[in-house]
Image (cartoon, rainbow, N blue to C red; front, side, top):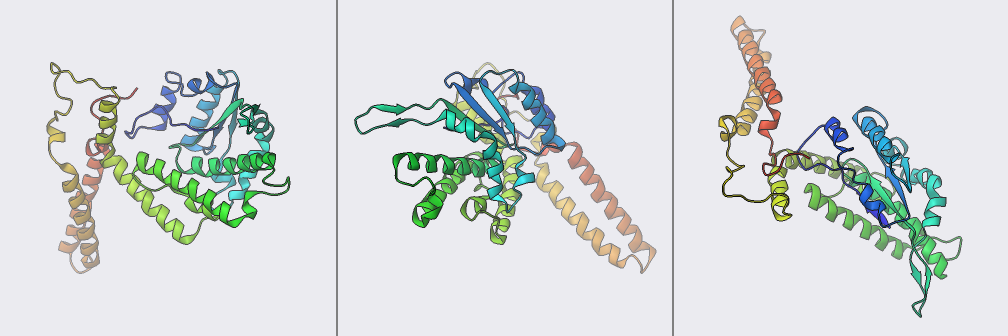
Amino acid sequence: MLITGWYPVDRSQVSIHHVICLLPRVNPISRNCKNVMSLLFFLLLLQHGDEGQLSMAYASEMEKLPHVRYVSFDFHHYCGNSNFDNLQLLYDQISVDVEKQGYFLVDSEGKILMEQKGAIRVNCIDCLDRTNVTQSYLAQKSLNSQLQRLGALSSTECISKFDEIYEKFKTVWIEQGDEISLEYSGTHALKRDLVRFGKQTFSGLIKDGMSALSRYYLNNFHDGIRQDAMDLISGHYTVNRNNPSPFQLNGFESLSYLPVASALLVGGLTLTSFTLNQAGRNAQHFASSVLWAGLTAGVMALVKANGRQFCSRPRLCGLL
């Protein structure tokens, strides 16, 4: 059984350091340990920078849990955009544990021949792209093992030798990855080519870039209301008529500053570039260049200093 795990934070854009502070308070792994004998936990983060700090924080939390084997695997380092088969390095580390976990198997008479004794949980940052690619690889390994046990495949065969079946298998994983990604991020999953072709193609790279830009826009300017809807539907937020509306805005938020700031930035950059081309002709053009460059820098500083005010933030419930 494969489990996809999200980090215990909401949709609002928070720093990695905030996530690390939340880990001891909301341990998302312990719930998985109650009903299984063993749990394999994979973390597919980079081993440096902010992701490296988060990886170390999770490793520390894993030490507190029984029946859990924690494996850290730097997906980008080993696989990049074209080395899908390098996931074999990960599988080699955990193949014995996977075999011990087994799977549920009954015969035609309903007699239980084998029971599953564990689960595999896979995490990356948003548990969409790297997670889906890794889970598809593990699912392929598991399916090969089960078909070999049933006699549908010989001990030396695998589903990749049968084009029609293999294409259906890959399509299933690509489509389910897209559905989860659309629900969570509003775009199709990235790295779909790694599942379909085993490497990144140029057209796939373009599509991933467009999806990444769409995610950035949706995350910053649309996801706040989506988180509010989830909090309201799930009962995390309870409406109380005696409380003031959480949607009351202060003076800064009441105005639509984003379009104005965007227009000033684009206009300032354009006029700065235009006046710079004319700056060599006389002092007036040079002064205009300095003026527009200063105005543009000031707007950029304002946006940076008040970035959270420009973004769509959940208002019903604060962070954990």
